[in-house]
Image (tube, rainbow, N blue to C red; front, side):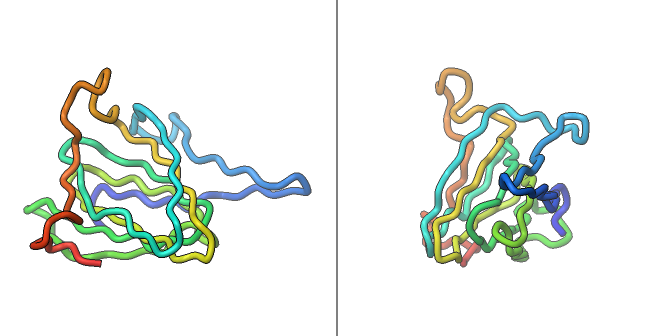
Length: 148
């Protein structure tokens, strides 16, 4: 696995009312989230690949099924730019912490759209949305080495 990437299977607690899963506990990590958002990805849609220079993402894959693609783009990495994939969401609900310098993308492969929650450790565009966006968008680059 790529250094700094943390994948944790979520424990689903079910009863007659439905289910509950703990997705984040401050006492179990040094990670500090700055904001949260939820997104829907339609069937067959790919988001990414992109990476962040400073920001980490803490994704929660629960609803729908996804293929997650990861590449370590840090030049000193032992597995530099090698693609790793993981099936997440659906029958494998999990959280995935992705540090800066790790290119990531995901594709919804379920028959229904999937929902993802992200808890990044930096505010989008900084305080008051006054900074440049911390993203390197490889999906827009025709010479991208990160192909899905």
